[in-house]
Length: 337
Image (cartoon, rainbow, N blue to C red; front, side, top):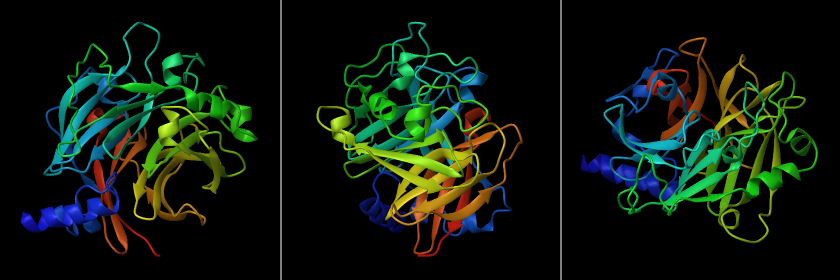
Protein backbone atom coordinates (compact mmCIF):
# COMPACT_ATOMS: atom_id res chain seq x y z
CA UNK A 1 0.00 0.00 0.00
CA UNK A 2 2.88 2.42 0.63
CA UNK A 3 3.91 2.19 -3.02
CA UNK A 4 0.39 3.13 -4.11
CA UNK A 5 0.27 6.00 -1.64
CA UNK A 6 3.55 7.43 -2.92
CA UNK A 7 2.28 7.17 -6.51
CA UNK A 8 -0.99 8.86 -5.61
CA UNK A 9 0.83 11.74 -3.95
CA UNK A 10 3.02 12.15 -7.02
CA UNK A 11 -0.06 12.38 -9.21
CA UNK A 12 -1.73 14.82 -6.84
CA UNK A 13 1.29 17.10 -7.08
CA UNK A 14 0.72 17.28 -10.87
CA UNK A 15 -3.02 17.95 -10.96
CA UNK A 16 -4.49 18.00 -7.46
CA UNK A 17 -8.04 18.55 -8.75
CA UNK A 18 -8.30 15.52 -10.98
CA UNK A 19 -6.00 12.53 -10.51
CA UNK A 20 -7.32 10.08 -7.96
CA UNK A 21 -6.26 6.50 -8.23
CA UNK A 22 -2.84 6.25 -9.85
CA UNK A 23 -1.45 2.74 -9.53
CA UNK A 24 -4.38 1.35 -7.57
CA UNK A 25 -5.66 -0.67 -10.56
CA UNK A 26 -2.62 -0.90 -12.90
CA UNK A 27 -3.40 -2.00 -16.44
CA UNK A 28 -6.90 -3.18 -15.65
CA UNK A 29 -8.76 -0.64 -17.75
CA UNK A 30 -6.77 -1.67 -20.82
CA UNK A 31 -8.54 -5.02 -20.74
CA UNK A 32 -12.10 -3.74 -21.02
CA UNK A 33 -14.45 -5.00 -23.75
CA UNK A 34 -15.50 -1.61 -25.14
CA UNK A 35 -18.05 -0.90 -22.44
CA UNK A 36 -15.38 -0.34 -19.83
CA UNK A 37 -15.05 -2.03 -16.46
CA UNK A 38 -18.23 -1.72 -14.42
CA UNK A 39 -17.97 -0.33 -10.90
CA UNK A 40 -20.69 -0.34 -8.28
CA UNK A 41 -22.14 1.90 -5.59
CA UNK A 42 -22.79 0.66 -2.12
CA UNK A 43 -24.93 1.58 -0.34
CA UNK A 44 -27.12 3.50 -2.78
CA UNK A 45 -27.16 7.27 -3.17
CA UNK A 46 -29.92 9.04 -1.24
CA UNK A 47 -33.34 9.84 -2.63
CA UNK A 48 -35.95 8.29 -4.87
CA UNK A 49 -35.12 6.57 -8.15
CA UNK A 50 -35.37 9.81 -10.16
CA UNK A 51 -32.80 11.54 -7.94
CA UNK A 52 -30.48 8.53 -7.94
CA UNK A 53 -30.55 8.62 -11.75
CA UNK A 54 -29.67 12.32 -11.90
CA UNK A 55 -25.90 12.41 -11.29
CA UNK A 56 -24.62 14.95 -13.82
CA UNK A 57 -21.17 15.74 -12.51
CA UNK A 58 -18.67 14.85 -9.80
CA UNK A 59 -15.36 16.00 -8.38
CA UNK A 60 -12.96 14.62 -5.79
CA UNK A 61 -10.48 16.08 -3.33
CA UNK A 62 -7.00 14.46 -3.56
CA UNK A 63 -7.00 12.67 -0.22
CA UNK A 64 -6.89 8.97 0.69
CA UNK A 65 -9.46 7.65 0.13
CA UNK A 66 -10.72 10.32 -2.30
CA UNK A 67 -13.60 12.41 -0.93
CA UNK A 68 -15.99 13.50 -3.66
CA UNK A 69 -19.24 15.36 -4.32
CA UNK A 70 -21.97 14.66 -6.87
CA UNK A 71 -23.82 17.28 -8.91
CA UNK A 72 -27.51 16.35 -8.98
CA UNK A 73 -29.76 17.96 -11.60
CA UNK A 74 -32.98 16.97 -9.84
CA UNK A 75 -32.52 18.24 -6.30
CA UNK A 76 -31.47 21.24 -4.18
CA UNK A 77 -28.49 19.42 -2.66
CA UNK A 78 -25.25 17.61 -3.22
CA UNK A 79 -24.11 14.31 -1.76
CA UNK A 80 -20.63 13.35 -0.68
CA UNK A 81 -19.12 10.00 -1.56
CA UNK A 82 -15.77 8.22 -1.33
CA UNK A 83 -13.99 5.81 -3.68
CA UNK A 84 -12.55 2.45 -2.62
CA UNK A 85 -12.19 -0.96 -4.29
CA UNK A 86 -13.95 0.11 -7.51
CA UNK A 87 -16.96 1.19 -5.46
CA UNK A 88 -18.61 4.55 -4.92
CA UNK A 89 -19.53 4.79 -1.24
CA UNK A 90 -22.20 7.50 -0.71
CA UNK A 91 -21.96 9.68 2.40
CA UNK A 92 -23.69 12.75 3.88
CA UNK A 93 -26.18 14.92 1.98
CA UNK A 94 -25.74 18.72 2.00
CA UNK A 95 -28.33 21.33 0.98
CA UNK A 96 -27.01 24.09 -1.31
CA UNK A 97 -30.21 26.15 -1.79
CA UNK A 98 -33.37 26.49 0.24
CA UNK A 99 -36.16 24.07 -0.66
CA UNK A 100 -38.75 26.81 -1.22
CA UNK A 101 -40.61 25.49 -4.25
CA UNK A 102 -38.89 27.81 -6.73
CA UNK A 103 -37.05 25.10 -8.61
CA UNK A 104 -33.83 23.21 -7.99
CA UNK A 105 -30.45 24.64 -9.05
CA UNK A 106 -30.08 22.04 -11.81
CA UNK A 107 -26.40 21.48 -10.98
CA UNK A 108 -24.62 19.98 -13.97
CA UNK A 109 -20.92 20.08 -13.09
CA UNK A 110 -18.52 19.87 -10.16
CA UNK A 111 -14.86 20.70 -9.59
CA UNK A 112 -12.25 20.74 -6.83
CA UNK A 113 -9.25 23.05 -6.58
CA UNK A 114 -7.02 24.32 -3.77
CA UNK A 115 -9.29 23.51 -0.84
CA UNK A 116 -12.62 24.38 -2.48
CA UNK A 117 -15.42 22.39 -4.08
CA UNK A 118 -17.45 24.05 -6.84
CA UNK A 119 -20.89 23.28 -8.25
CA UNK A 120 -22.23 24.63 -11.55
CA UNK A 121 -25.86 25.52 -12.22
CA UNK A 122 -26.99 24.86 -15.79
CA UNK A 123 -27.46 28.59 -16.54
CA UNK A 124 -30.25 27.56 -18.87
CA UNK A 125 -34.02 27.36 -19.01
CA UNK A 126 -35.74 24.17 -17.91
CA UNK A 127 -35.56 21.44 -20.54
CA UNK A 128 -39.19 20.48 -20.97
CA UNK A 129 -41.10 23.73 -20.44
CA UNK A 130 -38.44 26.41 -20.95
CA UNK A 131 -39.04 27.95 -17.52
CA UNK A 132 -36.64 30.34 -15.80
CA UNK A 133 -35.47 29.30 -12.32
CA UNK A 134 -33.14 31.83 -10.62
CA UNK A 135 -31.24 29.11 -8.73
CA UNK A 136 -30.19 27.47 -12.02
CA UNK A 137 -28.11 30.59 -12.79
CA UNK A 138 -25.83 30.23 -9.77
CA UNK A 139 -22.31 29.00 -9.11
CA UNK A 140 -21.58 27.50 -5.69
CA UNK A 141 -18.32 27.24 -3.73
CA UNK A 142 -17.49 25.93 -0.27
CA UNK A 143 -14.20 25.24 1.56
CA UNK A 144 -12.97 21.91 2.85
CA UNK A 145 -10.02 20.81 4.95
CA UNK A 146 -7.24 20.03 2.47
CA UNK A 147 -6.03 17.11 4.58
CA UNK A 148 -9.42 15.37 4.80
CA UNK A 149 -11.42 16.72 1.84
CA UNK A 150 -14.33 17.32 4.23
CA UNK A 151 -16.03 20.54 5.36
CA UNK A 152 -14.90 21.92 8.70
CA UNK A 153 -18.42 23.31 9.23
CA UNK A 154 -21.67 21.55 10.10
CA UNK A 155 -23.68 20.36 7.10
CA UNK A 156 -27.36 19.51 6.78
CA UNK A 157 -29.67 18.03 4.18
CA UNK A 158 -32.27 20.70 5.01
CA UNK A 159 -30.44 23.88 6.04
CA UNK A 160 -27.92 25.71 3.84
CA UNK A 161 -24.67 26.37 5.70
CA UNK A 162 -23.45 30.00 5.57
CA UNK A 163 -20.04 28.78 4.40
CA UNK A 164 -21.57 27.85 1.03
CA UNK A 165 -21.11 30.94 -1.12
CA UNK A 166 -22.86 31.58 -4.40
CA UNK A 167 -22.44 33.84 -7.40
CA UNK A 168 -24.72 34.92 -10.24
CA UNK A 169 -22.03 36.88 -12.10
CA UNK A 170 -21.54 34.24 -14.79
CA UNK A 171 -25.08 34.87 -16.03
CA UNK A 172 -24.22 38.41 -17.11
CA UNK A 173 -21.02 37.28 -18.83
CA UNK A 174 -22.98 34.77 -20.90
CA UNK A 175 -25.71 37.28 -21.80
CA UNK A 176 -23.13 39.84 -22.93
CA UNK A 177 -20.93 37.37 -24.84
CA UNK A 178 -20.50 38.14 -28.54
CA UNK A 179 -21.81 35.92 -31.31
CA UNK A 180 -23.54 32.60 -30.83
CA UNK A 181 -23.29 32.36 -27.04
CA UNK A 182 -24.94 35.72 -26.39
CA UNK A 183 -27.49 35.10 -29.14
CA UNK A 184 -28.65 31.85 -27.49
CA UNK A 185 -28.42 32.97 -23.85
CA UNK A 186 -31.55 32.11 -21.86
CA UNK A 187 -33.32 30.54 -24.81
CA UNK A 188 -34.86 27.02 -24.88
CA UNK A 189 -32.59 24.09 -25.62
CA UNK A 190 -34.47 23.81 -28.92
CA UNK A 191 -34.06 21.47 -31.88
CA UNK A 192 -31.19 23.22 -33.68
CA UNK A 193 -28.16 24.88 -32.11
CA UNK A 194 -29.69 24.70 -28.63
CA UNK A 195 -30.09 27.45 -26.05
CA UNK A 196 -27.13 28.27 -23.81
CA UNK A 197 -26.75 25.51 -21.24
CA UNK A 198 -23.66 24.67 -19.15
CA UNK A 199 -22.65 21.12 -18.25
CA UNK A 200 -18.83 21.01 -17.96
CA UNK A 201 -16.75 22.49 -15.13
CA UNK A 202 -13.03 22.50 -14.29
CA UNK A 203 -10.63 24.79 -12.44
CA UNK A 204 -6.96 25.18 -13.36
CA UNK A 205 -4.98 27.62 -11.23
CA UNK A 206 -6.93 30.86 -11.02
CA UNK A 207 -9.09 30.15 -14.08
CA UNK A 208 -12.47 28.43 -14.17
CA UNK A 209 -13.54 26.70 -17.38
CA UNK A 210 -17.20 26.03 -18.15
CA UNK A 211 -18.33 23.97 -21.14
CA UNK A 212 -21.53 24.60 -23.09
CA UNK A 213 -23.78 21.69 -24.01
CA UNK A 214 -25.50 24.21 -26.26
CA UNK A 215 -25.24 26.17 -28.39
CA UNK A 216 -23.37 24.17 -31.01
CA UNK A 217 -23.04 25.91 -34.35
CA UNK A 218 -21.49 24.61 -37.58
CA UNK A 219 -19.68 21.81 -35.77
CA UNK A 220 -18.32 24.14 -33.10
CA UNK A 221 -18.66 23.83 -29.34
CA UNK A 222 -17.72 26.46 -26.78
CA UNK A 223 -15.80 26.82 -23.52
CA UNK A 224 -15.82 29.98 -21.41
CA UNK A 225 -13.00 30.79 -18.99
CA UNK A 226 -13.18 33.38 -16.17
CA UNK A 227 -11.16 34.42 -13.12
CA UNK A 228 -12.42 32.08 -10.41
CA UNK A 229 -11.77 34.27 -7.36
CA UNK A 230 -13.31 37.37 -8.94
CA UNK A 231 -16.35 35.29 -9.86
CA UNK A 232 -17.06 35.02 -6.13
CA UNK A 233 -15.87 38.55 -5.39
CA UNK A 234 -15.36 41.79 -7.26
CA UNK A 235 -13.49 42.93 -10.33
CA UNK A 236 -13.32 42.08 -13.99
CA UNK A 237 -13.84 38.36 -14.66
CA UNK A 238 -11.55 38.62 -17.73
CA UNK A 239 -13.72 36.24 -19.80
CA UNK A 240 -12.20 34.28 -22.68
CA UNK A 241 -14.25 32.18 -25.12
CA UNK A 242 -12.71 29.16 -26.84
CA UNK A 243 -14.24 27.64 -29.98
CA UNK A 244 -13.59 23.92 -30.54
CA UNK A 245 -14.36 21.72 -33.53
CA UNK A 246 -16.04 18.69 -31.91
CA UNK A 247 -18.61 17.74 -34.56
CA UNK A 248 -22.03 18.69 -35.85
CA UNK A 249 -24.62 19.18 -33.08
CA UNK A 250 -22.08 18.09 -30.47
CA UNK A 251 -21.64 19.99 -27.22
CA UNK A 252 -19.73 19.54 -23.97
CA UNK A 253 -21.08 17.25 -21.25
CA UNK A 254 -18.18 17.48 -18.78
CA UNK A 255 -14.62 18.74 -18.30
CA UNK A 256 -11.77 17.34 -16.21
CA UNK A 257 -8.42 18.95 -15.50
CA UNK A 258 -5.28 16.97 -16.33
CA UNK A 259 -1.60 17.82 -16.54
CA UNK A 260 -1.26 20.20 -19.49
CA UNK A 261 -4.93 20.90 -20.15
CA UNK A 262 -8.39 19.36 -20.07
CA UNK A 263 -10.23 16.20 -20.95
CA UNK A 264 -13.56 16.90 -22.62
CA UNK A 265 -16.56 14.59 -22.47
CA UNK A 266 -18.52 15.54 -25.59
CA UNK A 267 -22.04 14.52 -26.52
CA UNK A 268 -25.16 15.53 -28.45
CA UNK A 269 -26.83 18.86 -27.82
CA UNK A 270 -30.17 17.08 -28.02
CA UNK A 271 -30.98 13.56 -26.85
CA UNK A 272 -29.40 11.34 -29.49
CA UNK A 273 -25.89 11.24 -30.88
CA UNK A 274 -22.31 10.14 -30.31
CA UNK A 275 -20.45 10.53 -27.01
CA UNK A 276 -16.66 10.91 -27.14
CA UNK A 277 -13.70 11.91 -24.98
CA UNK A 278 -11.16 14.46 -26.24
CA UNK A 279 -7.84 15.73 -24.89
CA UNK A 280 -7.23 19.48 -25.22
CA UNK A 281 -4.02 21.37 -24.35
CA UNK A 282 -5.80 24.77 -24.27
CA UNK A 283 -3.98 25.84 -27.46
CA UNK A 284 -4.24 23.32 -30.31
CA UNK A 285 -7.28 21.51 -31.75
CA UNK A 286 -8.64 18.79 -29.43
CA UNK A 287 -7.44 15.21 -29.95
CA UNK A 288 -10.16 12.55 -29.89
CA UNK A 289 -9.24 9.68 -27.57
CA UNK A 290 -12.33 7.46 -27.63
CA UNK A 291 -15.90 7.09 -28.86
CA UNK A 292 -18.03 5.71 -26.04
CA UNK A 293 -20.54 2.89 -26.34
CA UNK A 294 -23.55 3.57 -24.11
CA UNK A 295 -24.44 0.70 -21.75
CA UNK A 296 -28.10 1.45 -22.49
CA UNK A 297 -29.65 3.52 -25.34
CA UNK A 298 -31.69 5.54 -22.85
CA UNK A 299 -28.74 6.89 -20.82
CA UNK A 300 -26.35 9.82 -21.28
CA UNK A 301 -22.65 10.00 -20.38
CA UNK A 302 -22.42 13.14 -18.23
CA UNK A 303 -19.59 12.75 -15.71
CA UNK A 304 -15.85 12.29 -16.24
CA UNK A 305 -13.42 11.64 -13.37
CA UNK A 306 -9.70 11.12 -13.95
CA UNK A 307 -8.36 8.21 -11.92
CA UNK A 308 -4.74 8.35 -13.06
CA UNK A 309 -2.36 9.59 -15.72
CA UNK A 310 0.56 7.76 -17.34
CA UNK A 311 3.03 8.96 -19.98
CA UNK A 312 0.71 7.89 -22.80
CA UNK A 313 -2.68 7.16 -21.24
CA UNK A 314 -5.34 8.16 -18.73
CA UNK A 315 -7.50 5.96 -16.56
CA UNK A 316 -10.94 7.57 -16.27
CA UNK A 317 -14.32 6.90 -14.73
CA UNK A 318 -17.50 7.74 -16.66
CA UNK A 319 -20.88 8.11 -14.91
CA UNK A 320 -24.25 8.23 -16.65
CA UNK A 321 -27.41 10.26 -16.19
CA UNK A 322 -30.33 7.84 -16.39
CA UNK A 323 -28.76 4.95 -14.46
CA UNK A 324 -29.31 4.58 -10.73
CA UNK A 325 -26.18 5.65 -8.81
CA UNK A 326 -24.45 6.73 -12.03
CA UNK A 327 -23.58 3.27 -13.36
CA UNK A 328 -19.82 4.05 -13.21
CA UNK A 329 -17.48 2.48 -15.79
CA UNK A 330 -13.69 2.64 -15.97
CA UNK A 331 -11.72 3.16 -19.19
CA UNK A 332 -8.09 3.48 -20.24
CA UNK A 333 -7.53 6.17 -22.88
CA UNK A 334 -4.32 6.25 -24.91
CA UNK A 335 -3.00 9.56 -26.24
CA UNK A 336 -0.09 10.93 -28.22
CA UNK A 337 1.93 13.99 -27.26
